[in-house]
Length: 573
Image 1: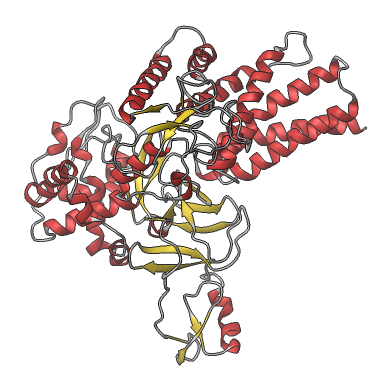
Image 2: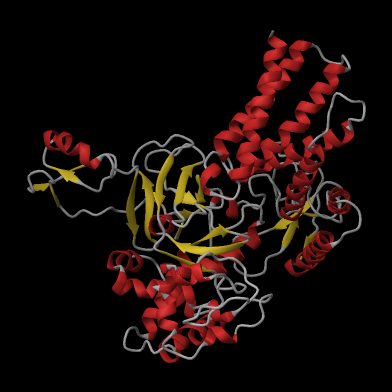
């Protein structure tokens, strides 16, 4: 994993002369598709294509002395292209986890334990599965039965912190090929040593446990174990599994550079192989760096950068982080208390220290208009405001908002829609910018809540609530406008939101048609627009239909698409 702030400049793929796979002579004509193989002539390249076409990749691995290895497109990659698939080097529980089955990762109640190592498992079948039986179970039998001491199944358990690292370490003897792939990754040990709490915790809960408790001193030293922990920390991806998340270490996936507006998205199979599929969310030009995001795109800049520094050990300096408005989305905007239209934003968003927050109407500041919550390129306001606020004061405001959101999520008073709408009424445009990251999360939850209310509503009846439908539509459009800037293209949030938009948009149109407020032509155009939403949603979520827990949504989208097509056909007859 590297930060996209490394550019292709100075990045060089290997210059080592490679032998032609046909005649074995030294060759200097590289395959233009992947740059990973050379030929002595076009004739030998054509002869070898039947074999090479299955290996030829649309990216090359390049190296930068500062940032290490990264991926660069070796051809123009159209939007929606599966760039590569990748199988994990190892998978296992996340560092902080509840007690889970070490084979299927189901959360446990303690009713069954492994008969050999005493760790809680869900069944005899999972106990005997090679995932557990051939890995940590063998090692755990060397020492005292730590697993038998696990008794609280509703709390995070430190006994699981060594599992994934141990599985990686065992690859050295059991799968040398995977072990060599692991060793090519970044571990950032020197940077991780600068975080004493993390380093010391790893040393006690993992390194000493394996070396002393489980008697592995003859197999590994402290440095190797710390390095493996680094490989996992820096390069792992979350995998949705059952009701929990586990982690997987991927070689090619880990080579993708980070950018807070990435050009790919990925899905990971929930089947046992946990294969990763990486797809271009926007067109990628030849020579461009292939990027992903290791931070939640709905977070504001200061929060994203702190997360990346803490978990991935680098300071992101991408274009979005550099722009205090985050491409005119104002995800970090806090309402100015001195003027009517301004919002406070970090004056120096890339500062690693506390920074002053200034109003968007400050005389020296020129940013897009931020007053109405809609992404705009309007001219700068004529109002001049010198309001500033310390970052600590901003965090006090955000802490209060975060607490209110958490309390709302735990509350059972009223409906989910009413609780979430009350939050927006209190904060949107009054305390926070309507597009603030906290409020976009509320809007995202509201879209799900409204979607539940739309189910089963028959817009042919007079009971249709147009206000609710229009509100639902407006919230979907607001979220989509923000996603255009921070998570563009064929991305999962867009696919889900377009699906959620399709129902209110259609029901509004049908109601107006039945009330003779619009004619057949306008009604037909409205249905065609909704079908466009659903077609895009299908294209996006098709990647999910087999490999992720969101597969059920794809089926709903297909059914809704077919139903609206039938309605359109009936209008054309």
